[in-house]
Length: 291
Image (cartoon, helix red, strand yellow):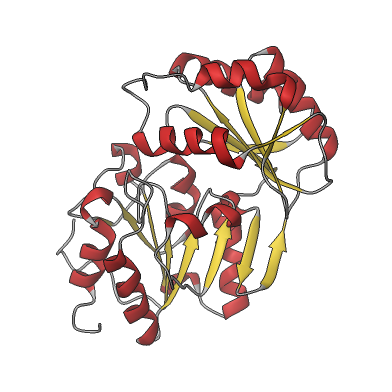
């Protein structure tokens, strides 16, 4: 737990967003931004490792927010400034097959192309809208619910057909835990036909990426770019899509708001939750003599 001094000073810190530096209102605090600035001035590299696409990040961080690099879409893409470090893409064959199956199962989906607005086919809009009807189910996190409302109203491009050839991920949601679990099981069956990876960050979602791609593979590429050893690397996260990251880094830290099976992967657990600026508190306490 925090305060046991288990972890040394890292050379690099990878921060998850949702449930970690993002609170449940989908905002990164100014205090967290300022702490990241201080850490970087002290020579510690700070990176984001998120399930969000690169285009989703700007609207949830304070003005002037800067890090050394981004691992996005659960390891599908990596960015250093304006440089695209790597990009993996789902095949059009896989995309078309999954959309067909999602429609048959009436599963809410958002497809994320590179360099284009996320898209959903317009013929699926009716059942999609039904999935986010009020009231919010009690078990759905407010941050995920607000993100879906915003996506439906402003972020999704409703298309007659799939456009583009390069896609970073699929995001699937259901207001019912049973429905999304059935879809996860269907995706597992699909993996017998065509290879891909999947990962969940809540009990109501699942995301699809290229096979054998996840946050840890993206972190590995980022560390190689900056010539940093994994032995000098900390990762902080809270959910299932952080599992590979926490298993890979030598200094894994779990959020207080994480489930027990996530905390079991960590050497330390923050004292405070994401809604209490838990990352800022943890890193300030851990490195207060350095920042």
